[in-house]
Image (cartoon, rainbow over all chains, first blue to last red; front, side, top):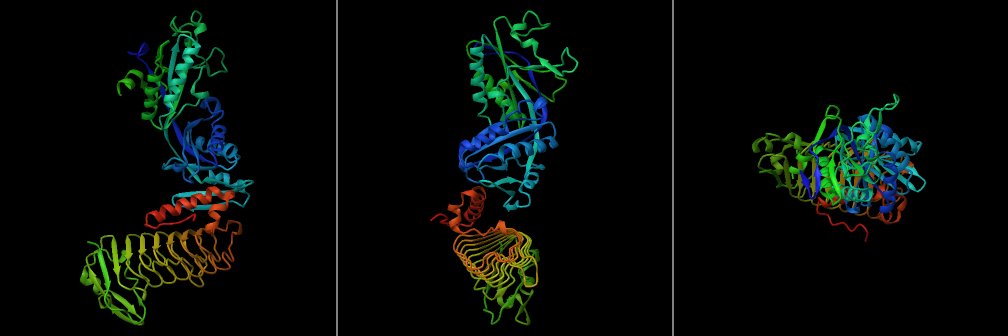
Length: 297
Length: 244
């Protein structure tokens, strides 16, 4: 199958069941809300090394937030519900509460919840105040610029982590441009994040290593410099750069839609192949077949 | 067709009509409804002696006439809706735990006293002790919402523990007296000694109109309260000039 001159390999991305949550950060200005969101989603690229994966879902105009101030929605994913609770508490406590003028609300309705404000409130040292308005249970924590307002608990739902695309291009410049176009299109899809720097990862990994202490190592099959050296190389002679885009989403449909628009946007001149990473299909619960995703439109 | 009760005879002294409650009128026909017992002063009389009964309860009761001497309407109700077209007397919705009461006119004293849940909307003015605790009782309102479009008198939210009271106009003295927690929003002026005897002094939640514009330090919670009440007020056709 081809989109323009780019070949779409008949394979699948292998994705995993994760748990997801959504935090809505608001602040006096869009810039302050974004500063808190960027801080909260820092060092959250891969669950293996960072204990969670997080990213900015979208900016929210003032009329779309609870307190009618500019906001940013952040999605955070982890491997279990307890992990979500811990990571939200750490990150909202260290990165949102500390940021001037912010407030932080739950953005996901679910039967499963984790206490966040319910834990952070103790920072108030007894001066914290509970406030229930409508369906929201909030904590008012006195801080040096006024109050930090944070929701008592946050919803957690089943989610999908590790959807991915591999873009093989003739050189770095062309491939980078295609990856940029893809991430730009993918960010328009609600319910997903691209957890890596600017949405793109260049150090894709395989499971295992020749060194016993490592559980993962460089994906030699996709390293263009190892075309002659690796046992198996999947980089065709026409390609000299491979970039990966990893997608986490609150549901499988959002991840598939993001992959679909990503492939459409990345299929530019000079992009030889678009493929996806998998582990033979035995590890991940979700198999996202590239051809099926394109045909589903 | 919903149940309609029309007052045909003005009582000489107040009537205690706590039988007019959504929870007590399920599957009751017109004849049985007319025969329900109410107290006219110290005398037991029948509902039909004062009210014309039409229709059957289907989740909504409409009550017409000058009800300013009818007390305890909807007291203890847990669901459904009561719509009162005119004025209403004291103890409206006292101790209610759910449902909604809408009053098109003015309401008397002690409305929704010791309320646990549900919503009371008064489009006119309300009397003393809105959502208050009865004398001798340590805790007043424990949940739900009371929205007064007009003014409220003394001791609004006395010993309040939880929930929301919004007064679109002014409230008189001792607003939020002995309050433990909850939210009272007064968009007009408050009388003297607001919040006297409050247990959580730093949380003084009675907010006057001026604060909406001049409290950047509390911006999120105040904006949230504005949003919360404008949402409620919107649903009741109330035109609020919040920042005028």
